[in-house]
Image 1 (cartoon, helix red, strand yellow):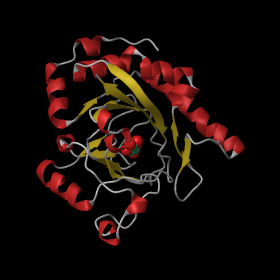
Image 2 (cartoon, protein in one colour):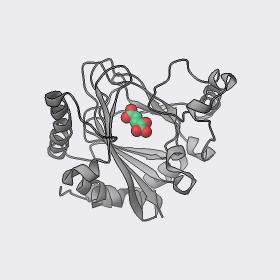
Image 3 (cartoon, rainbow, N blue to C red):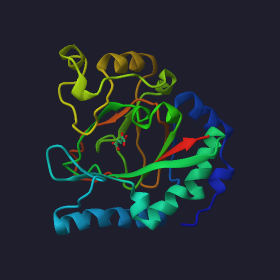
Image 4 (cartoon, helix red, strand yellow):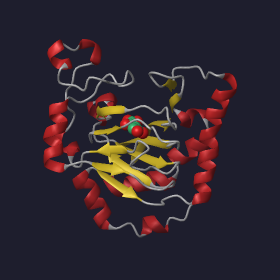
Amino acid sequence: MPRDHSELKNFDVSDIQFFKRNGFLIKHQYFTSNQVSVMKGKSESYLSEFNKKKTLSGEDFLYEDSTSTLRLVRNVHKKSKFFQQLAFGRDLTSLVQHLTGLKPTVLNTKLNFKSAFTGEQFDWHQDSIYLGEENKNSVALIVAIDEVTHENGAMMIIPRSHENGIINVPHRDKMTDEDKSQYPLTRTLNLPYSLPNDVIEENYRRHGIESFVGKAGTLFAMHCSVFHASNLNLTPTNRASFLVRYKCG
Ligand SMILES: O=C(O)CCC(=O)C(=O)O
């Protein structure tokens, strides 16, 4: 997918400073509407395949807790040449290199669907606890395939929370009653490691919450130790995104 790299050439040193300090960055309209419509077609083919067969099997296909809606597809770069080229291509890898000063390697990829009416929440968590200590400074790039609004379950992040490093939290199946009382009553089954309320509260008091909102084609960059979450999507609009995590250095 050829792209004009002029934005990268104009990449401001203040973008890099902002990312280093806050652990995130938003680049609006990073991809053109033509590029986005190709991505949208490719991501919707998973949904139409699902609707045809009413199932897509394999451990990479994950469903919402309370409906048969497709929640996400893991390892899309192994299933689709298009997403492979996007994940490994210069559009994204050169951005990560600019932000971190380090050579990125693709760790994994995902399509998150967050479908209209049925897309469920992601509890507060850090990606780095799933990636391991050796990958704690990885970077996630998230491409908005649909417009992300405050209403349709935008990702919320706590700026500067990557400064905490990895917070050691218990697996949900190994929690004591005391541990459980520190968490929201309703939790998604899909995230065994999530962050307790007091950790969120302390960081929120210091740095607040920002939302990843933007039109389709916006690019969100996030340090993988940043605390983040998202709500249900009760709107009639889908909110799909393509996510790549890069190990840096
Ligand atoms: O897309 C979202 O709402 C959240 C995604 C997320 O937190 C993740 O994939 O780790």
